[in-house]
Image (cartoon, rainbow, N blue to C red):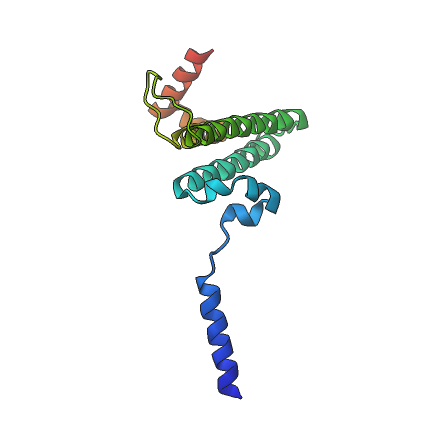
Length: 166
């Protein structure tokens, strides 16, 4: 009887090791959302890019709120709502890029474009661009909380780039 229990446990362990493990997105997001982004799940690079963007966006919101509340002592729910709205707009742009990739996979011919666009690259490009924006935003928040860092060459370069934008 003891060996039968051991055999059942061993078979169950082996079967569960063969089943696909849920990804971070499948654990965090509701099932209807994971169904919509199922094609991303098949592409590891797209999945990593989207998960990175999701995690960096949440970290940026937390860093901004924490900096405003703890260090600057001027937390404003209006500014937080603005930040969340910007993240949602980024997500909408990523969804548009995803739809362009879907249309390209369905046969949309973009060969007449001046720059060649490989299939599946628009979504990943947008994710990477927004990830870089999130990292830069968190770096600016970090620089606010560390005034001595503003004298370093990288921060001077970021300040020049920001002045050029305005």
